[in-house]
Amino acid sequence: MQVAVQLFAGARQFAGKASVIVELIEPCTIANLKTALALAIPALAPLLPSTRFAINMEYASDDDTIPQGAEVAAIPPVSGGSEPR
Image (cartoon, rainbow, N blue to C red):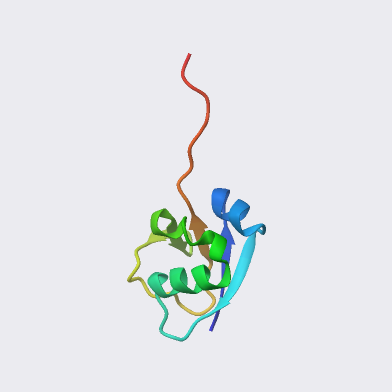
């Protein structure tokens, strides 16, 4: 099955695009998706261990199954911002 993944923050920068489509064998989990993303876009591999994933706008764990047609997002940790004054 094809899974479209929206990339945010550093993931988008490392990949050079806002989304990616990967082919996975069903049933597929977030862990399977991480492996497929690392193979499809090697620049993402360093971010994936600390990246949170969401399925249909709900945070998911590595063992959560991705249903057909799900909206999937990759949200790496972010840093920065301004210091309090």
